[in-house]
Amino acid sequence: MNGLDRLTARACRRRALLAIGAAASATPPAVLFAQPSTTRRRIGFLSSESPSDPHQRQRLELLRAALAALGYAEGRNIAFETRWAEGRYERLPALAAELVAAKVETIVTSGTKATVAAHRATSTVPIVMGSTGDPIGWGLTTNLAHPSSNVTGSTNFSGELAPKQFELLKQVAPRMRRAAYLVNPADRPPWLPAVHESARALNLAVEVVEAGTPEQFEPAFARIHATCDAVIVQSDTLFGVHAAAIARLAIAQRLASASSLAYYADAGGLITYGPDQLEGYRRAATFVDKLLKGAKPGDLAIQGPTVFERVVNLRTARSLGIEIPRAMILWAQRVIE
Image (cartoon, rainbow, N blue to C red; front, side):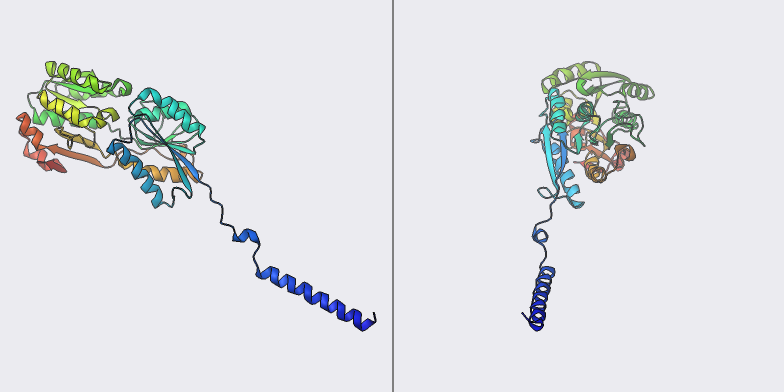
């Protein structure tokens, strides 16, 4: 091959290499055609009650909707592990352990009993309270502003609840001298001394009456009727699920009644005064989002209630022969006719 032929061959090879390089630069690597991988963050949800109860189910639905508004889509970048104790509170420790074993990144809890069970099951997985009683009284933290454990979120506890409820009952039943406080022994509130103290300020005696199952409701109300003029119903998930049955028993025993359960008056109770118990489930999404992005529970202050419901059931008042003062009607956000 002479010199000219060698130059020509070299030029041809060079043009071929340039063509291959151009084609490579114009065609993205195969990996660029692949769908970007998305990691599904695993969120646990633990409730002491049943999803068949509409109020309980609404809590999970609110959490899901709030997370969706923050960009979390189920099946794409988030997955839920839900556990329901169906009212069998002895199951909560095992259900909490299941969530930990499923390697969820955070657990949202519904109710005090669920929160306590989750806290006992893990000291490392962050726990977000949707609604819980006094977190300090239950030993979940020593500090609300800077949580001292793996628990943060929302509490529905407010020191003004019991004093205000006694005050309201005293307004509708001024001759009342003795009131009952209906509690679930599985969720016995640590603030009972404060309840007695607030009642004494109104010259009231308080009898604590326990009911831990629906079968115990009727005997409990018979006992209350024998010694008391009115009853305050603890904000417990068991009582919330059976709010209508409890309200019927209070009416049957001619007892004025009040509760911080959000739907107690709607179920037939006389007075509801308490925090919006769904507020915490809307806020829980923000806590979950921050935790998934690297925040620590100790960085996220536990939040108290900011919205309170004030509802009076005039229909129940009439059936009890109680005249509701006009000042209370004006005070109420809603009046059930």
